[in-house]
Length: 428
Image (cartoon, rainbow, N blue to C red; front, side, top):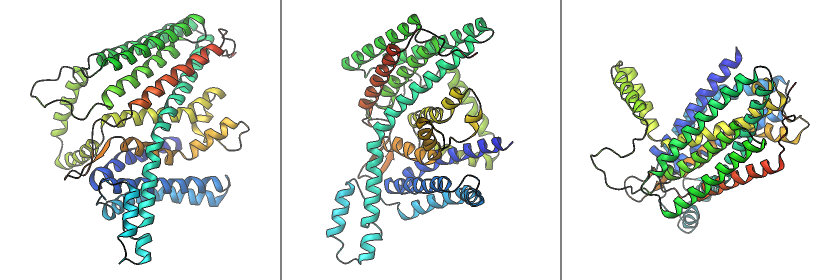
């Protein structure tokens, strides 16, 4: 029963983080968002460090852990209010180095305490600047880790499917898995067709798409034909490459995308059945009582501060990172214990220790990954808008292409080093 409450509280925590950080950026500006995310990072870093430092069966650990777990319901809104109240005015579009040097030479009338620890002081400016630069430089690292963890998920999926096929009722599982693989490939082809209809694709973009899709199609066919792969692995790899290509040409569009017209767009954002359901849902919500309607309006306004590309990228990265720390060890052990228990640092294998480290510090990693994604979708201006969310021109398509290339190369190396025998995957 406790696992159900754990899932509910984890979902509420994730929901709070997803909403509060972009609200801090959108309402208070860059400095407020950075201060809030940095304070959350430090809080959960200290929380994880305390849990690791105290013995597992210690009463002190249990008391401190429960206290910190309960205090986060007060700490998170308090930090948000503090960040919005104290750091709502941005310092402009200058870099943190320029602001620091400017403060050094323009603060002769300030005391040493204010100069170091006061508003726009050296400590504040250096910490925010270091945090911002760290997140910006960590963006490519998170992108490459996404591809690597995706390969781990694909390998785990292949292991599960071979285990299912090698046990009883194998013919039934083969039919089900083939149908599932076909649906994945069909969906990926649909989104690839939508990418091909985008008018902003240049000759270079078309060449990159053609080379990439040809290579991944060849690898998928070779893996299935040689027996070193299977349809599930091939379909998941194909779908991931299409996802990256689709995000490149939707997430990273130029911000000046033509003039606004009253005509309907050539390509609808979603299939018509989903759009019709969305309109019906809005009509139903409009008839709710005013109190509930106001609450939902607030949530809607909060979600408006987040672009869909950020949500999709965050959801996918959370899934593959979680799979790398929990699902993959459970598949290896062929048990459900690893899904419910935290990986331990006392495990003998080095991989388990690394996964345990990632699992313990997952809240801090979540905050850093999410803030890094948001920084890729924010822009600053000297006008009244200040620091606002934008839908594109974030300059990350190069690293997505590099990630796609490395993922394909690593999968090709895996196929080359693998064997066509299935005994390695068979479980008696």
